[in-house]
Image (cartoon, rainbow, N blue to C red; front, top):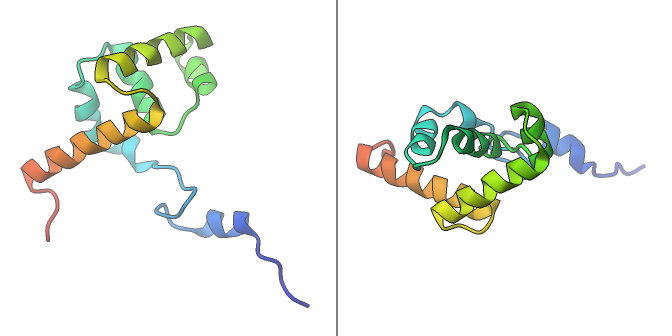
Length: 111
């Protein structure tokens, strides 16, 4: 009898770099927190960006911060406008780009 492939089982056992794994390392990354702090955002906006980097959705962010869902979305719209991005993907790419640039300047990556 042939065994069926179970994609959920492979994801649960896979390392963080696997498809479907959340970038959980970002919220603990001191350099990423420094970058978020240097974006020129308000403390509330910075916290929302940190929660987005942890993979949180708008409802979870609202609940964790004690804000209404429309307030979270207003903050997000202002963050996007301030940074010149249009969505969460561009926001995360923007932060990764800054992180990469900072690491390149500090020599974090060894070849």
